[in-house]
Image (tube, rainbow, N blue to C red; front, side, top):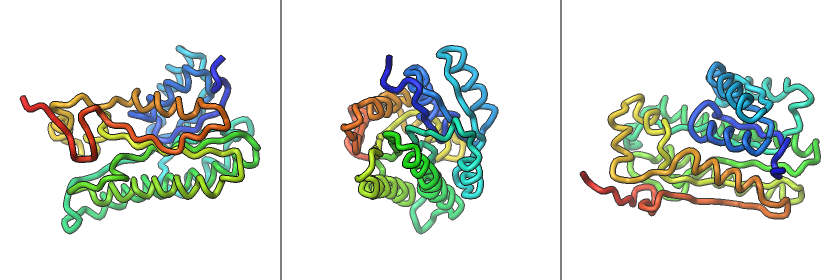
Length: 259
C-alpha cells in the first residue's frame, strides 16, 4: 500500500501541464483529489478518467486563484469530508510576455503577480489553518521556478514572482516549524507544457522555438518529484528541489543543438 493512499490532495491549476500530471501520479498512488482550475469541463473530464483508471475519488472546483473572494468561498464551502486536506500543491501559475521592464504590458504584470504570488498566498492562507485544525501531517508543495533563482532579460517580473514563491516557501517553513506541516519548493527549469504558448500569447511558432535543440523536462518529470517529496517519512522535509534538463545550467545558460 502506498504511503499516500487515501490522503487528500488539493491541486491548483489541475486542468493541464504539471497540475494534471500531479493529479495522475497521486491518483495512481491512491490519493483523493481536490482539483481546481478555471476550466470546469476539463477538470470533470480528468476526474472521470482518473476514476475509470484508478478508482480515484475527485472533487473538481471551478476556481480562478486570482479571485480572492472566490478562493475564500471555495475553501469555506468545502463539504466536511473534503476539509481534511493533507497536501496542498500550489501549481497554478503563468508567464506573460518577454518585454523589457520599460516596455512591459501592465496587464501581463498583473496576471503574473495576481496568479503566481497572490493566488498562491490566498490558497495557503485558507488551507494551512485547515491542516492545523485537522492535526494532520500536512504539506504545502509550491511549484516555483529556476527563474526565481536566476533572472534573465525580458523576464524581470516573472522572475520576481518566482523569487517571491521561494521566499514565501522559506518564510512559511519558519512559521510552521513548531507544527508537523512541511513546506517544499520545486524549482523546475525548462518544462515543455503550454507554458511558452501562454507566455507568447498563443504564438505556437515562438513557443516551439524555445525547446528546439534540447530535450526539455516533461510535466510527468516534475510530477514524479512532487510525488517523491510527498512520499518521504513524516520526519523528513524536502525543503527545495531545483531540476533542469541536462543541457540547462541556469535560466538562460542552455546548450541547444542548432539544426
